[in-house]
Amino acid sequence: MKKILTITAIIILTITSCKENSSSKIEREGEPDVMNVANENIAMNQAIAEANKTLSNFISAIQSNNKNYQGFTLKQKFTDAEGNSEHIWIQDVTFNNNKFKGIVGNKPLYEINVKYGDTIVVDESNISDWMYFDGKVTKGAYTIKVLRDQMSSEEQKQFDIQSGLLFE
Image (cartoon, rainbow, N blue to C red; front, top):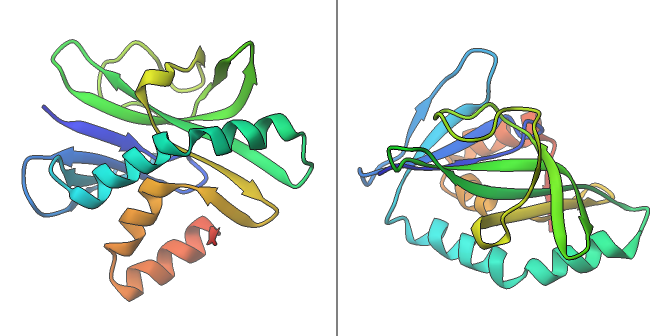
């Protein structure tokens, strides 16, 4: 079974997982690239656990109405009929009546029950990451940080230029 972690179009990078221990990249014309990450990747699994552990920070930020906070985004896991899992960023997230709602931010690789641009209610039990911007500083984005840390210094420079993300 494959697990895919998709990063919002802002970042122009998507992540999948594979059974191999190494990473590889799938390039899609007109779509974000896909990075394969092993299911057993300890750093990625820790990042997902940390995102879930700190989800209350995201909720507090979204409820604060702080004008410096923008770009509220969650990553949710979806599974197709064959058991392939795909983690996709949900953009323009709102939080009302204890439910997250947002817009599917990437074109899925697999045939799952959502498509790019759909407005959905997020399944909180399947959240794998969150992020928002405090001014220009990126908050959360645990899985993105893991991928960036695994890049060479040249790849990190290119990623930083393309994404425009600034981390704490």
